[in-house]
Length: 203
Image (cartoon, rainbow, N blue to C red; front, side, top):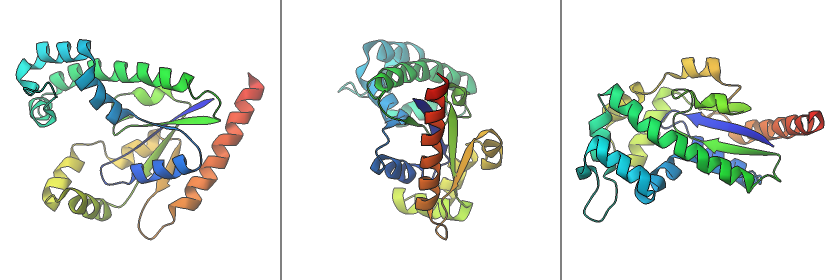
């Protein structure tokens, strides 16, 4: 079974692409949602986060205040690395358990907002990058989050540029409004299934 990582900058539409793969019968592991669950439900992770960032990052009801945590790590690369060092290994362990339960599939997809930035792209057989024009990305996020375009642009500038990620990605899906993504995904699905078959034969 092949393991495929998929990522894309804010507003690129990677969640939409993942939904299409899901319709095609390919299981998708949503890493960011799983990270959020672990930060609220895993006692060890909660304890470690409180020690490093202070107990006040959790509300009275015991839920992580994501905005407060983000404000702490936003301009401190060292603290961000500590956070990632706690969360990413835990999420990857959950992914391995999840993968074992879906071992009958030709390939699996791991969706994450950051894949190349953390170096975790090396854990996958292939990687897919979803890209879109800057203007379209800003319009999508502004409409979705009711955000100011300048705030969306700032968030985009805090992520690794697409031109850098393209160099590391195995496949690129272009998700602009004037392009059809279904045909791109169908072609990629067939390619990955054929690669999975070859991989099984080699094994």
